Image 1 (cartoon, rainbow, N blue to C red):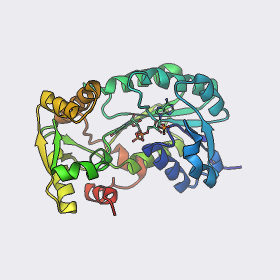
Image 2 (cartoon, rainbow, N blue to C red; image 1 turned 90 degrees about the vertical axis):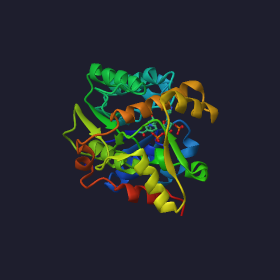
Image 3 (cartoon, rainbow, N blue to C red; image 1 turned 180 degrees about the vertical axis):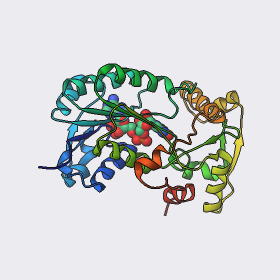
Length: 290
Ligand SMILES: NC(=O)c1ccc[n+]([C@@H]2O[C@H](COP(=O)([O-])OP(=O)(O)OC[C@H]3O[C@@H](n4cnc5c(N)ncnc54)[C@H](OP(=O)(O)O)[C@@H]3O)[C@@H](O)[C@H]2O)c1
């Protein structure tokens, strides 16, 4: 019998979820002990080819969750993307996990969820409360920003030569998704993380201007940070075609950066992954087109 529990990962076909499944395999978890919960199994063929269990589940459909979580001992709930309904959706997952007898729910929350004033944090705060009320042991993985938020669409942004934002000279501690995924895999495979809260971020704080400079240095192309007020940046984003609500949310998040709310000196990420977090130059290099 395997020394590892049966571990489910929701959102497994997402960017973070794919890294988590890989990190579990890298830790030696047998593929058959990993359950990938996906909306569309057709997008999970490489998991099935590796022997990972693929089960269909939608956060909005409680009956699909109950079936998908049968026999699961630990689950990573990756926060959803439906900004209107995700607290209810997360509650569906927590309820189904409780009914299935799951022994640990790890949840991808937001950095500094206790103290941040960012609008984006409200759903995470409500989900954290639902976890505490559930009576199921939980682990709060309060993720900071992904480096990929700034490197994931360089093909579109680099030709403009500017990174626009409203973060001022605030510092943030981003890390690549891979680091956060490894931290999640640690919590899911080790014991001793029941009801723990981790404030996760990279080891070295940077400003958005420093981030843009690093991208410029590595690409050899002009790329500079341009700061705007929150209303100006909101208008910039709507001008680029973002819906008003999403634009307001992004601009508000940058205001959080300006206040230092996406920065941590906790060291929790490096402790969970057992190494220094990926340095920004390496994270930028890894995300550039080869
Ligand atoms: N820390 C940060 O910088 C940051 C940045 C952006 C987002 N986030 C949050 O972190 C999460 C993971 O990030 P990511 O980059 O992996 O995002 P992503 O690639 O968009 O992945 C989101 C995953 O959630 C799944 N999902 C959404 N709604 C669902 C539903 N109703 N039922 C089942 N699955 C559902 C998606 O399923 P499909 O594969 O079927 O689409 C996808 O696999 C995001 O969802 C968001 O909450 C964090």
